[in-house]
Image 1 (tube, rainbow, N blue to C red):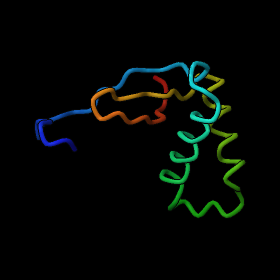
Image 2 (cartoon, rainbow, N blue to C red; image 1 turned 135 degrees about the vertical axis):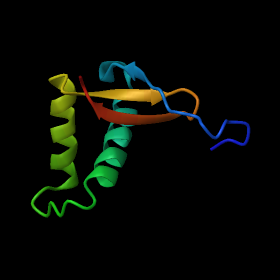
Image 3 (cartoon, helix red, strand yellow; image 1 turned 120 degrees about the vertical axis):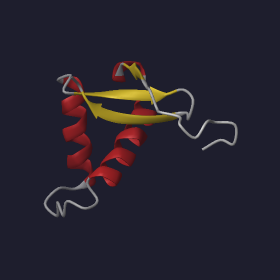
Image 4 (cartoon, rainbow, N blue to C red; image 1 turned 90 degrees about the vertical axis):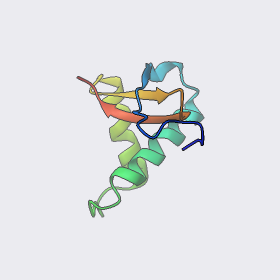
Length: 81
């Protein structure tokens, strides 16, 4: 967290349509997401490629979305509401 950022900072993201993200960047975001979120699930039957494809399918179906926080310059994938 940057020094000048208040300690009560709350991340609020901006949705970025996944179609507007360069494919290599989108893949990196998805890979980071699945390795972080699915690390404890013990999904031995799912390869990284299968997990990435599942997330891509959720993005295509608008069940998930990419959100970018402009202050922390981070991206995340969240459930669409």
